[in-house]
Amino acid sequence: MENSKNKKKFSVGKEGEKIALDFLEKKGYEIIETNYRFGRGEIDIIVRKGDLLVFVEVKTQKHGDFGDPINWINRRKQRQIGTIAKGYLYENNIMDMDCQFDVITLKYEEGAYQINHIENAFWL
Image 1 (spheres, rainbow, N blue to C red):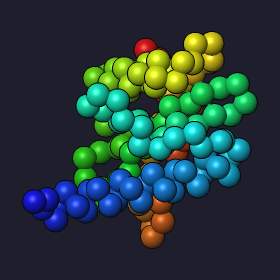
Image 2 (cartoon, rainbow, N blue to C red):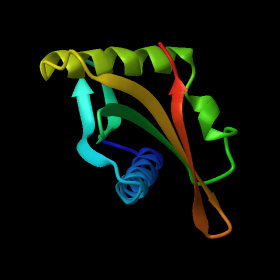
Image 3 (cartoon, rainbow, N blue to C red):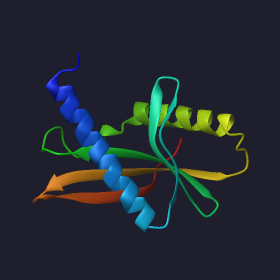
């Protein structure tokens, strides 16, 4: 049985992903897939813009705890996202497409979420 803290964390994360999806659509990205699972991991959002396939990690901060959300994506998390992305490319037989890794952070401040979209946030 989940405790209320885990449910709250889950709902904040899902809320952030929904806001990020709307944000990306408004910027002209085509939503390909959400919450893609491969092995033990997940990529929050996979989008396409022109000839570019983008794997997007979303981090949402509702309260001021734990520092800036961009710092939550450490080198280990980056490698995990890369492994999942390779799984996606393999499963979908994608061989010759440019890819990048973006991060969207959302911080709740003054009654609204502040969105920061970091394009090409890391390399593997």
